[in-house]
Amino acid sequence: MKIIIVESPKKAKTIKKFLKNRRILVISSKGHIVDLPKNKFGIYIEEGGKLKVEYVLLKSFFLNYLKKLKNNINEFILATDPDREGEFIAWSIVEFLKLKNYSRIRFYEISKNAILNALQNKESINLNLVKAQKARRFLDRIIGYTLSPILWKEKIGESAGRVQSSALRIIVEKEEEIKKFKEEKFYKLEVDFGSFKAYYVENKNDKFKDKDYLEKIKKGIKGKEFILNKIEIKQQPIKKPTPLDTALLQRVSYLKYKFSAPLTMKIAQSLYEKGFITYHRTDSFNLSKEFLEKIKGILGEYYERPYIKKSEFSQEAHEAIRPVYIKRDVNLKDIEKKLYELIFDFTLASCSKDGLLEKIVFILNPLSSKNLLFKAEGEKLIFDGFLKFYPFKISFKELPNLERGTILKAKNIKILEVRTKPPSRYSEATLIKKLKELGIGRPSTYAEIIKTLLKRKYIIKEKGYLKPTEKGVRVIEFLKSHFKDIIDLNFTAKMEKNLDEIAKGLRDYEKFVIDFWKFLKSLL
Image 1 (cartoon, rainbow, N blue to C red):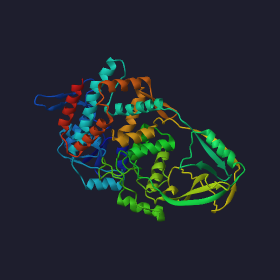
Image 2: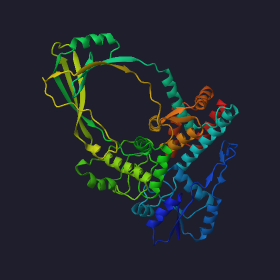
Image 3: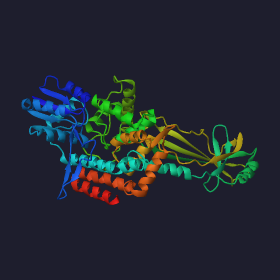
Image 4: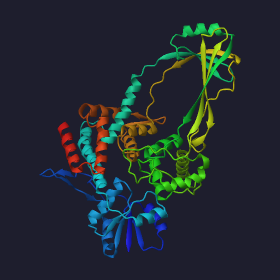
């Protein structure tokens, strides 16, 4: 008999459906089976500079169950998730059971073809990914166990973290930017022609500080007729979106439904384990050739291969998040159905042609004065392209169909007051975008980071935006005073790149962890 081991009971249940009448047992470890101890450090440097790690069994009952089966199993097939964490779980099962007769399979969607194909193409455990996961876990433990007690002692906060503290810093610094903001006041001269509005421009500028200056112009054009002197038309493509990676899924889910990042990941996990979408923890924008061939039938003349924007973190075998089947109407609960349909529609949009827009500008002047110019801007959609499937509505400001030389009479002329607005606080969507741009953390961890900051009361949600609390501000002020290098955004991004180098086998993980530990001790 053979046995397939996965992390999740739901995933095991879906796989079983595809392996009926085969002598293969499918079981779940229900997550990690080993971890660092809860109440002590668990990481040591031995004489000679070797790293020693103490692991604690989390699922001893699971290992005992496997030990009993061990002699009756011909092959242990490790089918944990195709990422660093999944690789570590697979490695820990092999390590702590001392398995010899095992293989590793990877699949990025839970479908019959994917499972059977993986069983035909067995692999070995990628030890570089295991080392990268270890390094990440050890790094977080070193920072947490070093800085958190200092925060407790100083009665400032509960915890500090490598990515958590950098994310908090971004939110705090945005609040400082808002407080420093000084409002400025401008004026615009608006002429309403009924079907459109035009604004006075001078040297390409339509905002003025001198209200009296505009009052004089207003008085001079009152009751005068205007001529449409020039029409400028320029075509402009509307670029379709890339396929969905983890960060983009979290952002569009928030924008569409106001789903929090943790909720989005929870729903996506369920959709993946039920076999409806591909693996949801991915930095890749790739879509398989097979899927692209299938989707042509739905899109017809709208079809066009998506732009594949290379991510420095992505692995070639990974795909973007997409539906497994070319079917929008599926039997799912309300909240799962919403996210599935968003993924389906967004994927179709990413495989469609660009839209095409006409940008139209009217240049007008009063008949009595050719030197006074007024400008109206509008848009006209020429080809909808991806917008036919895009799950977000985009509105266009259209201008009436007029010819050059048309004489127009103003229905109303007024001076508008315009005040500059302070920078916006980060929403979950914009924070995730910022973290991704800076290369801080991995998209699969963003949900947990936001959840932790809220739980620690370092930030609160106010009208959908993330605002630091006094406690959060104190934590960042303290860390910037004493450990500025640890929460330096460039330093945090560099650490992420180092972890990726470990995953690619380009850097020694033990040396990396020890060097960081020594560096942190020097700061203490």
